[in-house]
Image (cartoon, rainbow, N blue to C red; front, side, top):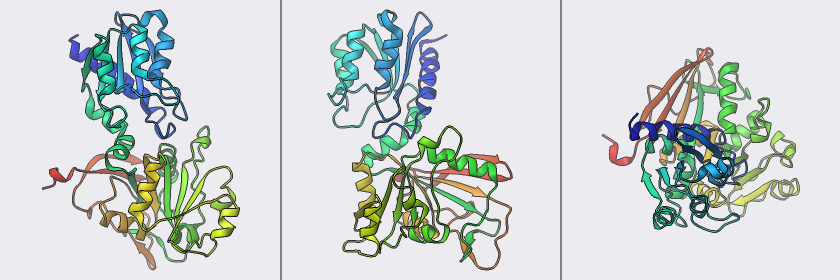
Length: 362
């Protein structure tokens, strides 16, 4: 096996490790690390739930003395700054690891090449860029937050056969089947936060938690765009705010239910618009934002170019008269999106689209 093929094999394993904790390590990215010596994996690590400890010290601890002279495969450049834990780059140097293979350089200005320099200055051989595309996809939320100053935004839409998201005045309308709803809950578990508009919150009274066995603790921060602070204190969101955080974004000077929401443990913040809200979320360490509704919020985000990914579920259900039209369908997408995946989920079809860099638009 060539050196490149071997490097790709173990980096692929490190990326798979990192995916296990996506959405559950904020504000840190979920990083994977695999330590290999003489063709044997002697240590594995993934960023722990909550963000600490990091992947590298866990893998080094598992490898023990076998780390000396070994090769470490890490999906992101080892950190170089002193935070709540010592720098991972220094831990690698102390372990005696001889070579480090890194998929992606860290754009965090506290690191940004400094981790690689610490390794190189210690005469550790460094290779960078192995499976970079795959690793960037695995850490896309974190990289978006670091480079754009906002979370990665994923828009989820379930569209009926006649192009509708629901029916006016009908509350929640079952458009997709149970298999699709399960995948939606898994996407929630992989997201740092989930957002709906006040129209959806009032019409559907959603809970927006993860309700899959074993993943209940992975429920994201729940956010409501509520310009006038109209969210009722009797809503499911407010009633569960003590166990799963709720943030309500209101316009400056809004009154409404603001005081009562605060009394119930809801985090009420004033923002001048959606861009300001996204910047605030990034400052709070939120890297990935899932948007579930409604049509107006989806259309606004798309019009402002703030959507990075679209998860579009197509259903055979007919909504009919009084339907709420979807701002997009599979055949009517905004410019700049490309399909990256398509699969059948139970009776429904899921298509995933990603925004291309502006330079790639035709």
